[in-house]
Image (cartoon, rainbow, N blue to C red):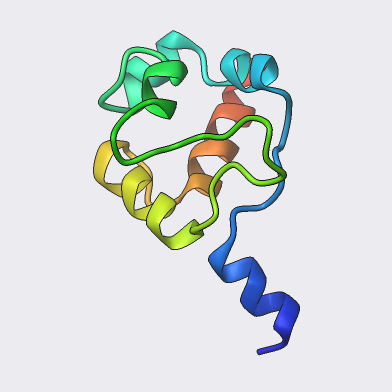
Amino acid sequence: MGREAALYETRMTALYESREELQELFSDTFMQTYTNFNTFEEFTFSGAVFVDWKADFIVEDRKAFDCCVKGKTSFDTWAQMYEKAYELRGK
């Protein structure tokens, strides 16, 4: 595994959208249906998730973040959660 690939495995990818766009993407309805939270903001402030909106990355440890997603949502990974929200956005 190359250095860049290894870095990808331990860091979340860069922010997909702005904070406002992510809050719109992960609507309250989405969060209440697919997670243990009422809002995306509640999710980002949960004990297991720390989001630094001014950083280049949402969180540093992708595996830890995916564990949180798996434990508190209907998804196994952040990528799956994001893809589902993006898919539903157009409906």
